Image 1 (tube, rainbow, N blue to C red):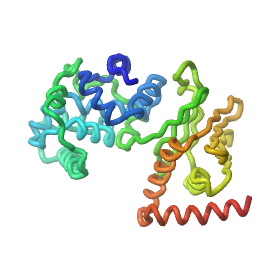
Image 2: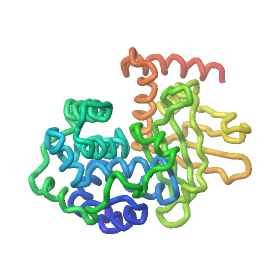
Image 3: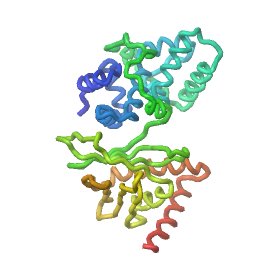
Image 4: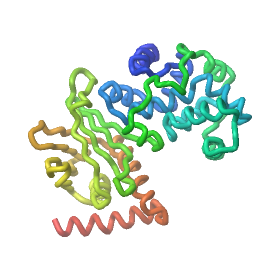
Length: 315
């Protein structure tokens, strides 16, 4: 069960401003397990998780709402601010401070802010929020935090991630947890990153000692085909600078079994049941469709069926 007070303490330890309990509970309603798992991973030093949290919680600061009013932009709801923070990271809030402090001139910051805000509104992120929730947004436990100063400010790797949408799916087992997250290759192709961690206690996992593998775009069709049970098994070999990492997916009755490995480390293995499998499948499909926007979901699945059958006949 979500504990807002514990989460508040976790955020403050990360030097991230914590909103009121009411707003925090609404953010959890919107973000769900992504929020709680990101806090866990941020505590282990994960840069992408820190950037995600900074993006959301810097964006819901009451001073952001005040600055939006000064900039004569439509009054925001909490879901709108969360959506912007999720998409833009802490960049939006910092650009807004810089722009308002300089008198809202016609410059690059102004153009970026207007485009981003209009896009969020147009995408219908701004669903109606009750008056109590809007008022609660102005009751922040540490409202004196200035987005423009170095409070939990991201280092360079985090800045590179902050402009990307942070989307992931977690699968938890008794001894292992795995995170499937949207990622991009060096050539900016969309793919999936798999991170696997061993349990360090009851419902806690050692993400600092994770095994991380970025899938190649050539592997995505076979991974999807195996998750869809079109292909019986797939082995992803040759990952890491020294080809020291590999993973395997195998269909078993009622589940897909995943094993993530690295030379010299204990294997991270767990079964993925139907519910979790669905969530991972949709994430993989979303990434593949970004690489081929001319395809529909139906045509992608038809192609996967053909390539999956090809792989099965070769096996």
